[in-house]
Image (cartoon, rainbow, N blue to C red; front, side):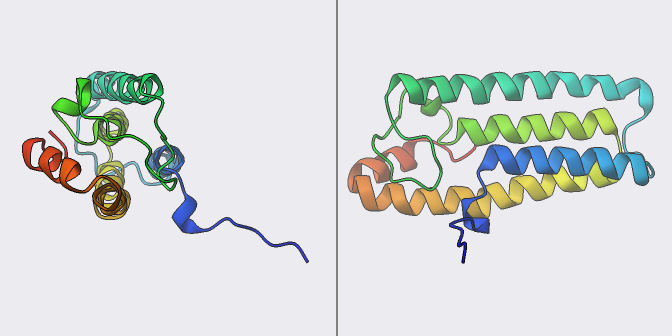
Length: 154
């Protein structure tokens, strides 16, 4: 008998973003209307997409420089509070959210915007809430001080 450790809880945020992006493409192809953003303005979605990717990659690089754990479900090893984390407790998630909004803008379809919003809600209520509980347990007062002085998103 083969068993698996896979569970929905182990769905990493970048994988969820890819799934949501694929769903946006499918929704746009199958149900392109109603369109919330007229065709000439859809290309503006490249801006939040590019900024989002840049922010997420830069925050990821900051974790690498700090030699800390990036996996959402692994035990946190260091509390990173400088750089991008000085302005947002979750710049990687912020970057992914911006990227999702950018893809929704490129599509223009209402379904894509709904999927981008769903992504943000899942990230906020599931991933971030989970990580914050672990950070509080691991770093205690240091995390509480950081959380009071730095916004969750921006």
